[in-house]
Amino acid sequence: MLTAAEPAGIEADVLVLGVGSRDGEPCLLADTLPAPVREALAATLAPLGVRGAPDEVARIPAIAGIAATVVVLTGVGDVDSDQPVTEALRRAAGAAMRSLTGGERVVIALPAEPPGALRAVAEGALLGCYRFGRYRTSGPGAPAVALVASPNGDSATAQADARRARILARAVAGTRDLVNTAPRDLYPQSFAPAAADAAAETGVSVSLLDERALTEGGYGGLVGVGQGSARPPRLVRLGYAPPGATSHIALVGKGITFDSGGLSIKPAKAMETMKCDMAGAAAVLHVVLAAEALRLPVRVTGWLALAENMPSGSAQRPSDVITTRDGTTVEVLNTDAEGRLVLADAIAAAREEDPDAVLDIATLTGAQMVALGNRVGAAMGTPKARQELLEAAADADEAFWPMPLPVELKASLKSTVADMANMGERFGGMLVAGIFLQHFAGSTPWTHLDIAGPAFNEGEPHGYTPKGGTGAGVRTLLALLERRAHG
Ligand code: BES
Ligand code: MN
Ligand code: ZN
Image (cartoon, rainbow, N blue to C red; front, top):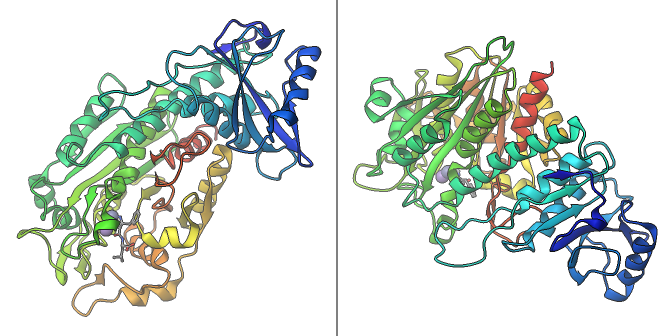
């Protein structure tokens, strides 16, 4: 997907070029075009009304000196902004690819500077090619993998960047596919074999606990949440253990394949997006697979806590008391606070193997969206682990923001009958959920990511982000494992 050839001379249907804005004026970011071509094209920007704003994509006929038929100008935004340029380029590449349909031969010539730009452009281009077609009987296909033109495109580092981008994009697309799949088709008993299939012929081992094993093993959270559904729960364990690994990270994902709320049922509107409630588990599956594909020298164990939260005659009731894997008793005051129950079991299971750190990722609370909106995830946990996560997020250009775990909120989780209740104070609901999980993380270095907002895009597509499942967290988790791999 890389070429060191001059982009102007490449025969293609589409040449993608970047336009930034500087002091309110558009500026063509096309250093690799011959000067006369560049100047002629730059002169068309203002008359065309191209401003170089993010998510602005203009499709124009190519001019003399360009071998491609069409030029797609994609906005990079303010070139002097204090936001990372790499992310602006990733989004610009993604927005360009989103505007294209299948069958077009595409060359992307976006800036190769600063360091990391080529990687970002390759990632953005591949992420922008994503389409979810499973339930469509017709419609445009996805554009093919683009050719990215870069002066050092044939160097070994550029080739490695492209390979990494492909693996990363596959992980994000796999996560998006699972999130977008209708809950009729994706449920614990279908998710588990899908995970096993995806791991087949890789170095990732898969084992699973079914409802009997979960009951016998004392996984009261998974059993309690799953008991209202006709489709029983599962706990899937994914193991990647390369020889010589010095670090062992456990990743735990919330995998509620549909969250109706259970007997504490959600209003109809709030249920519409609740197929996304397994986005954490989907991310964990694909991050473990990507770590293996990249042969990262880090031991990674993934835990998928899979259940469907449904109301029925066999559902758990508000005021029921369950016993989680680690022996803690929990009074289930609200069956819609189910994520923390399945995570309690999975975090406990993960800790039994004594990993160096546990990291959970979950669409856990509506309060997360109130606090940080739809595009920023929350990171809580033990201070060092949380800091490491935030540094990884910065490496990956993903938006995560630190959130506290105030001790005083613990009192609100007191139960009159059990060790804890699953619901506490309404204000700071995201933090209360974090405090609940903290009990199960115990003394292990631990990070909790709440991705309720960023996991699912209910709004318009933007940059490399489509409607629906986004793959939030995948890049950050992979970056964290890479940090561990490189010491
Ligand atoms: N899955 C939801 C959280 C959620 C809401 C994710 C919106 C994505 C978008 C979670 O299980 C839930 O229902 N949480 C409750 C907790 C409350 C009952 C303490 C919530 O946030 O309202
Ligand atoms: Mn819920
Ligand atoms: Zn939920």
